[in-house]
Amino acid sequence: MALPPHPSGRLAAGVCVFGLTHACGLTWADTPKAASQPLTARRFIDLAVDCGLSWAELPARMLGELDADSLRSLREYAEERQVGLVLAGGQVPAGGLMEELRAAHALGAPTLRCILSGVLCGDRRNVPGGWSEHLRKCASELEKLVPEAERLQVAIAIENHQDADSADLLRLCRQFESRYLGVTLDCGNPLSVMEEPVEFATRLAPYLRHVHLKDYRVHAAPNGFRLVRCALGEGVVDFPALFRLFDAQEWPITRVVEAGALQARLIPMLEPSWWAEFGPRHARDILAALSAVWNGLRPDDEEWRTPFERELSGEELAAYEWEQHHASVAYLRRLDASGS
Image (cartoon, rainbow, N blue to C red):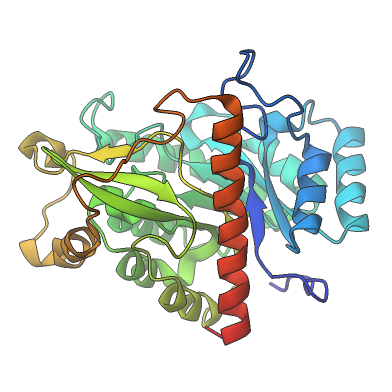
């Protein structure tokens, strides 16, 4: 598969709505703290251009009705501005991905990003029927979707959404062995299932289709550790190593900046029951993740709560989001200039 070349002077990367949820009207909606002029889908595409980026990832719910005329109009708007689109869909077992897959095709998007569940922090303890049964249901749904993805030539890319580990995603990809079923790598989320990001990406390398460029700072907690959003390059993720891996793959992997959630993620890996829904692992298998966490721990007296968690003003939250966004783009420009 070949992607169109990115416009001269722009980075090959893009931006994702979920790193700017306040700016897009998704955080504190319908409250006095909400963004006064939330970004629409078109204004988000304009943001990509203004920041010198080449891609925009938009969720289906931000597009309104997924009718043919609306999708065609948005596609034309993006194409005029030389911005490629990626569609962020919902959960695999929820049953709505077929419509979203066809919407992605109508938008000219090479990829439909989706997730397996709403699980966060690697905490699978309350999944109805257990995690293995949940994966079986996901595989059953994918069996219906993959032939349509192949027909439309739109890749279904399952994100490691703080729920799936590399073994889960490998099992699903190998079950179908389709070029149009792969993985959206969230670069920070492997730590939520006690895997190191570069090792995680290496295991899944042939199946990588899309990437969320995300970094985390790590703070100690009594029952594990917290992952706290930060600008790219200010946390524990080794982006130069990841970029070398991405560039070595046959499939051209799209990449978008997606800062972490506005809530810190507590990973309770010191609770024995947290591990119950994971497959057996040798202690050696988590050493790289433990090393990343241990060596990346922030000072105990450093504030880990975001402005959202401290319930600061909408203006302060907006400044926090935009500062991290612009710092992340600047970091990517430095990497691009250095050839890393």
